[in-house]
Length: 192
Image 1 (tube, helix red, strand yellow):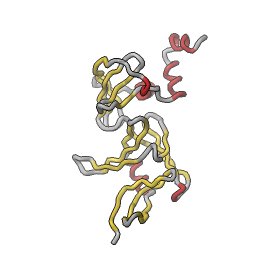
Image 2: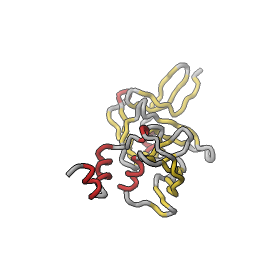
Image 3: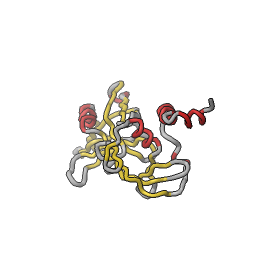
Image 4: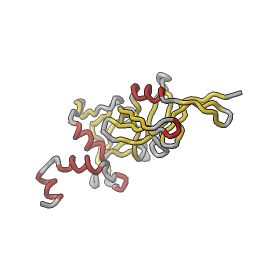
């Protein structure tokens, strides 16, 4: 039976295929805008449709695989034939698990999101630390793919802080984290 024939008879074939292949090539698709979908990704990473939580992880992952952030700052679910806007309260993903290999400058940090995507913190998947404008609290994020970011869960951020090291760089004392040959600055202070 052909692959397309299997997809037609087995509604979960597409979900299994996405699990194996990863995100769809949404950057290659330019379908017409078809309106707004009442779908919200909340700050905690939960997905809600018409006020009800989407509890099936496979469905969340299917939607996440066709998620795109366009230059207009709007999040869309994109297929080859249509594009619908959705609401994202903060970041579309949440980094929930941290794994460390090596130490010091040789250290590599892997983060896994609530959608089971794992990335290595590096130049391509960089850590950004901003402050929440309303509370002043740290708002750590990491680039996952194509402008889509993950909010780093508080427990994971605390683990990152425990890994922090201090170095002298260009007349400043920097506190940060090494991963994959990069140093991600968390705080700086001038040295006299």
